Length: 144
Ligand SMILES: CC(C)(COP(=O)(O)OP(=O)(O)OC[C@H]1O[C@@H](n2cnc3c(N)ncnc32)[C@H](O)[C@@H]1OP(=O)(O)O)[C@@H](O)C(=O)NCCC(=O)NCCS
Image 1 (cartoon, protein in one colour):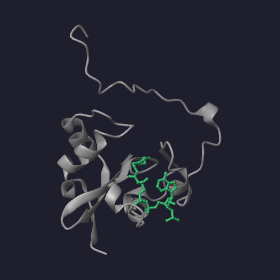
Image 2: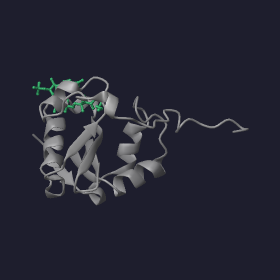
Image 3: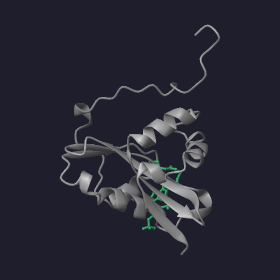
């Protein structure tokens, strides 16, 4: 297996990550500059194959009480080899993320992947609120 795990924002390939995230259902159209800033301000892990980044995951956290797992992906040609699990495990094992009171994530269909790491559906969804602008990256009209 010719895969290498790298950690830390500085090791990530922003162009590769932007190319993938810009096509996803959750971050479609995201500008490169926003991707770069999100990486710089997160705990990041990437999977590299022959030097090219083929997977990514990050956690947004205060590194004390709370973390948000985001932007987990593996390029299609490299899926099914436990690479996503390896990245999630590496993030959850970081010293900065030990003893957190809560971690959250959002997913459309990969619940079973995250269940392997103890994530569950919200026990009390009525106690959680969100502020969400799904159109934030869509081009504004000429008047807007
Ligand atoms: C989801 C994704 C990251 C999985 O990557 P991967 O490297 O193929 O996953 P892994 O091989 O590490 O393991 C996935 C495990 O979760 C399970 N699983 C459950 N739901 C899944 C789903 N929707 N997609 C992929 N795997 C899923 C698999 O069966 C597998 O378990 P197993 O090893 O016991 O068979 C990858 O399919 C992907 O990039 N998808 C598109 C982006 C996306 O939807 N990301 C999730 C946003 S939260």
